[in-house]
Length: 260
Length: 235
Image (cartoon, rainbow over all chains, first blue to last red; front, side, top):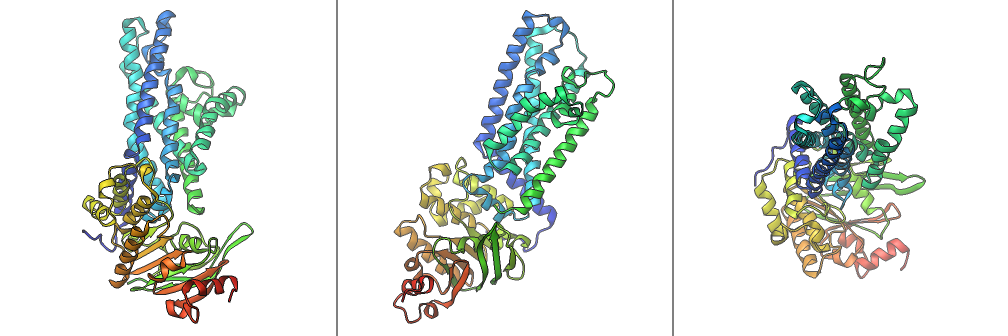
């Protein structure tokens, strides 16, 4: 066998940790089940929204707005993916194998988030595009016209939002360490606590969900687009990146301290 | 050749004291057995040694550094803890592949260790379908990937059938004979008497005896008799 060199550089160690984390992610059947299931559910929802749009006054909405409406629900799949990436470590005592192979915990958990970002970006882009393509195909010229710049901007916004939401979910998963509990916390926030706060607390526009929506969902922007003090897409993106960084840092800090 | 040095290890969890000053060494070329009843602190000692748990005070060193500072952990220490250490949804081969990648080891090494532990035919099966014994073999395969100087095993014979026990005994003796360090824990005295050179007996978080197998057995008929005399005060 090839004996590894007695010393390896930090860079090489990082690259090897990333390779290991990528290998873990792609060899976990749940990764592909979750991504495939999310794509299918998104297409079903997009079809439902498009059909509803055909019966209503589609002329007021573009194919982009209708095609992306399903993302508000499909994001649940990305939340689950992020949580699974982090919490699957705690199945079968795998965490002990992980940490005896990669004892530098900050490096290992960072590599895990990076691997997740690499896997989730193309998946998020495909999911975002699938709804819009389906809607545009069905509605054709009946929907409100949009520029290609608007389409590209919305798709990039949605893709980034889904990817960052996945990373936040992994960070929360790393902190909670239990799949079900982490999923309940995140979905409870996104679908119950977040919308309630948005309606009652002005500062809620800076929270990850509202800031994230501002990146891609103009009608959901809070306060409404055009109002003074509304979060712009760029500000929303910056806020969500900051939230992601803070939550990953919190995950790393906790992870470095506790017994596994 | 690396020595394992445990020095005055204390571990408290809340108000409970799990380890109250454990000290001993495990030397190259020898199989050291950490013996004691369930709950004596054997697993906790090994977990602190491997950087999985933090000690309240004291040190556990591989050569001169703590485990978490090792530059190439997989090539220095192979660890087998309880269970398989693998996610049940992955195949045995997929599990070993990601572990190998973490140290930059070639794919061919995965097939080598599968062969060594006798899991070649089960390598494409999901770990969830493995028997207890197969899970233990997979854990050992991961530990052997980097052909390490040191093997650390928590209750290695648990879940193994008589063939498996005989096989792992031979493997550990061979590792020690080639000058490597083997540290294992067990609560089964007789399984170990034939395997270990040195014995460290722990009870209630402290070392109650430390020496060669003959020294610890002393005037008692068997290691088991000596163990009960040491841990329960029985004659």
